[in-house]
Length: 77
Image (cartoon, one colour):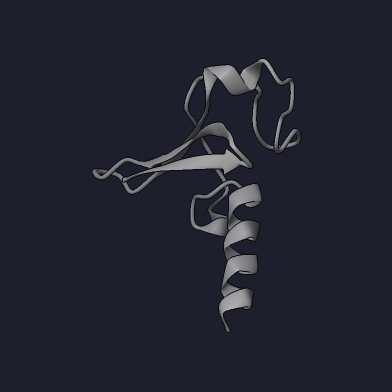
C-alpha cells in the first residue's frame, strides 16, 4: 500500500508498506525538497531516500504520522 502525504496542495512524500516484512517507509517528494521544510527534523533525514523508523513505539510509523492518526481518531469519536 502507498499513501501520499500532503500538506495543503503540496505533496510532501509517500508512506509505503513492504508487504513481505510489514515495515513502513517514508520518502520525501523531490519537489518538496526544494521547500527546505523537514516535517520531522529530529527523526527524518531530509533526503529522498526511503527511510524506515526503527522504533516500534508507533507500530513502525514515524511519530509525525502516528500523532496525526491519533488526532484523526479523536475527531471521529
